[in-house]
Image (tube, rainbow, N blue to C red; front, side, top):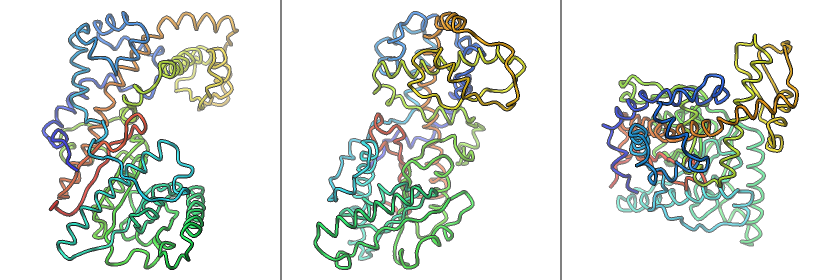
Length: 467
């Protein structure tokens, strides 16, 4: 599978970091939408941006990520430049057209319990691994050096991907590693169900089928200190033979686990291949930047930027207007609640933390705020409010601030444009990190349909040169 030339033009990395430095004021408060009114974030926009955005109806604001080309001529030049650079500096997240899904022979229980999203992800990775194995076996046959491949699935969850790799026609030996008891228990139960179905459908004993020992799950937490030998020691003796080469796979490895996987791949003699899709870039220890090239650019991504990188324009564009409007409404309610909480607790200097408020409690701001007060957590649990708001007063506050609803919506959309630029920098930094350490074959490809699975940039690497 060929990568487009754009992603390997490493000379563009300084352009990306300079662009993000210039527009850091856009994303530096991404995690704190509660401060939109409190800190008057609207006034951060240049006057000409605000004048233009205030002329747009809500529906047009929310559709800008999809339809900006239709109205760009009417935008101020500085806003045109911002949006244009956001699009040109970002890696494409349009699914690779060469990755047509491969049909695999499977049993009904293999897909049981999968959501549409999970089924799409598993099918796509199966196709990638299948294509990769065909090329590998063709090359090894020509060299009379066939080596069986084993797979380690990191963060395997309930074993959806592992079971497909093991029990489909690929017939890979597969180890699933996860740190949650519930996931391991669920994976083992699924494996029992699959084996039961195979036994029934094939009308044969398991010894003849030689598949009972194809899949194994291990409960273990992998942190940045784990070594390849320690990870391999978790695996039952003789499951992975000395002659086996290992493919390390991570489907949406959370936070710093993605970097842990890269280091395991680099340090292990047995791990020859890598497939990794990261997510939740803001969780765990901050491993950005990883590459020396990006370190020399003297640029760091704050936690708020790592969070914003998880947002997806493709996913947003796939939403109906009502769903988009609900998303903005939640942000509006939370930012207004922050203003009122500051009036109720004027001596409190920190940030108020609200546990997630469910959708059925968001039918009106009054209902939302009542629920918010029940769920309020603060560092000072003994605080007593200096005032309370009647229902009429809350209605008045809501009416006053609702005049600025479209401004908050515009602020959100302008931030959304820069999200893929930040994610591009994170992914490209990891690619360059592998290249700097002499991994001969490295590419990043959009492996999933973005509207189904927004974190779709997959790093694929091999320690062998392409023949």
